[in-house]
Image 1 (cartoon, helix red, strand yellow):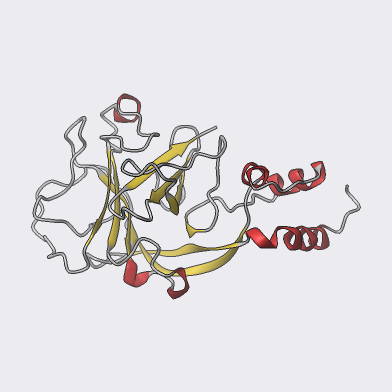
Image 2 (cartoon, rainbow, N blue to C red):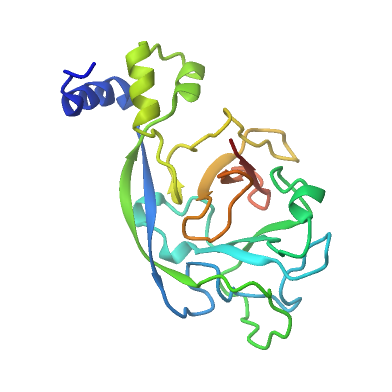
Length: 245
């Protein structure tokens, strides 16, 4: 295959996969102090009167991993989780074993918290209990639009037949995209792992992806990748699960 025109080969393969093409958006970030309600990785989140969320296992404050304000999202994304501020908190306390004790790789762990706050939530600025770990605060300043395509696991489920060369090319070209992104196709590590709603048991919609050691200086297991999803009917039902090699 060394003599193949790879650019032409990819264009031909994209044509074959065009029915399954999705748009994803990669966050563009800058290290700076943000406003309370800004979209960001880490830093100070918008908090309710209850204060900073604590881990249900070690009772220490959890780290804000990501906060997404629907007003900051690309217009073409059509506010995938609705109007509000999506927040993901995760226990990253180095002095605890919450990752192992609470199976943080699975959805609904007591060492994680996902929620969507209304845009008009009053800001609580006087906070005495905050995480001890020093994670850099990154403001999401914009979004880069990407063409995203499913991986071989998804394509097999969709009934798309690929040659061995096409499968190898997709694996080498990292389709779909790894790293942090809004929408698109999930970058699975061990195979398809969509979550189901606890209320209706329907497959939840993939919303956002967090990768190890990207915009957040944290590694999920052995270079794992986390996926945030939401039930399209029960918007309050959110889940985050991750898998590693």
